[in-house]
Image 1 (cartoon, rainbow, N blue to C red):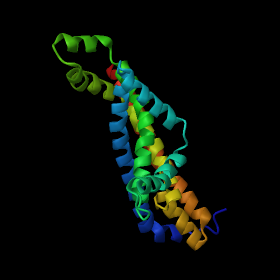
Image 2 (image 1 turned 120 degrees about the vertical axis):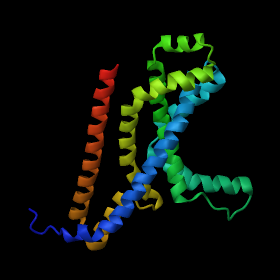
Image 3 (image 1 turned 45 degrees about the horizontal axis):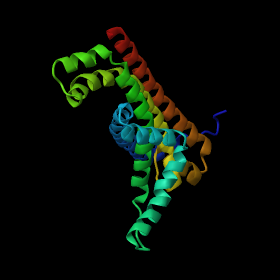
Image 4 (image 1 turned 135 degrees about the vertical axis):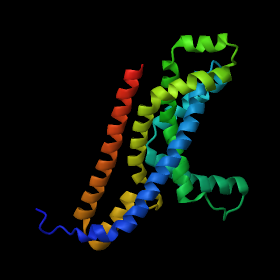
Length: 229
């Protein structure tokens, strides 16, 4: 079956593939950090008793979770330049570029999912903890920062990492705006050298090993935290 398999094409392409992997990991990390930060703000808005806060946040989450990620990337890549031209009146105004378009799209898209994860994590903190914080004289902000969010994030770590694994896989969609991630690098080498089987099998193996290892870590964290409760 592997008599005609060319292992050398993989070895020759490793520096280029490594650059693609660094891009994938960097985009995943930045979008995850931004998504968690924005998702936390959205979660607090959704839990707010003020309709002026919870309704827009709920609408945002429902809209983004009902929209394909590839469409969100297209929004920022194609529509933002048009909006900039319309606002500035400059027909030659440029957009924000493919990288920032992808980064903002991933961040805002993932924030909708992180919002629901974080909201559930906050609600998982026993009500007695909240009441005890207020009894100590803490304000809502102080109680949230010092008591509720630390416990909530501890409970959410495995789920947040699981969503990060999904984000890592989704970064392969950046090819639609001309960026080269790990999957895009493998595809370019496959097309250039005519070795589709070798490169796509290698890419699949790398994705499997990384995601399987990360999933194993998540399971260990879940077991550890479940014992600690």
